[in-house]
Image (cartoon, rainbow over all chains, first blue to last red; front, side, top):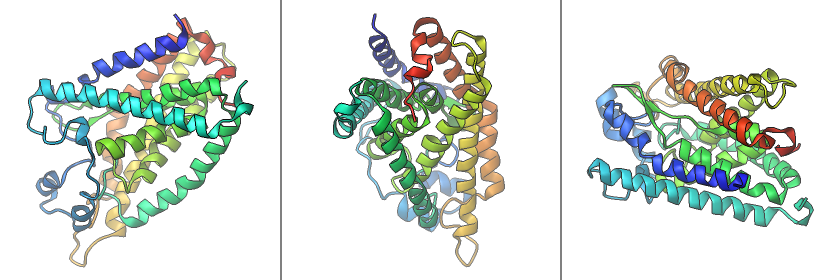
Length: 113
Length: 229
């Protein structure tokens, strides 16, 4: 098999395995990453929500927050795992498209060696 | 290590965008000059690998989670400048599409994970593997150590960025405006957890990929596969 084919397959396997990254922290009751708490977690941690943080933290509304579909926050783990796989696949598809597009725009014939 | 919106004040956010701008410019110039069209798929795979490996959250039981960045292996294979571009693409998509890392913090997050990490990782790897054969055990060990140290260095920078906020921005009555934890807490938390757990994850991922490539695709590890300066 060609090297590149193998690497693409490897990526596909990682996409399918990605829910491990969701289920493992859940199983071991681990919380957010350090410094990545939401406003309510911040309230619990220090007793207030820093004003700047409150203002800026909702600046951007990501279309798939936390690698899930909007409104899926309370869904059960199988649903969230599915959303996680979709996110991994979609993210990779977009990233690959972006890199190929950048290559098309910035690399010219000179680079065809 | 994805600093969200609201944790860094405008000063820090602006500063790191300003620092990254010339780095991105130089990286694009170098990659534009040296990357062959044939290497574009490899760059895409590197960016995609970094993206997906960051989704594998590893828990500290009852505590926080963290993950590898996968950037050191990309730097070893493609060189640090190409890795900088690849990881930047991954981080921007994470921020825009998935809200992982803030929009205002893209400069800082890219500085830590797309600049400090691949460059530190690449040069540590080069130093330790110095002139060793592609088939040697030494390059696997070098890759592991490079992964471990580079992500810790990136975590140190993230800790400093977090920890400076209470000094830079606070109200008259002592409430912080952004990240509430000072240097002591932030640096020990960020570096501590990476020294203990997440550093090993980056180290092991980097070493395993090098070991696999050594066995099956050794030509990718040769200096010829890299994007030349």
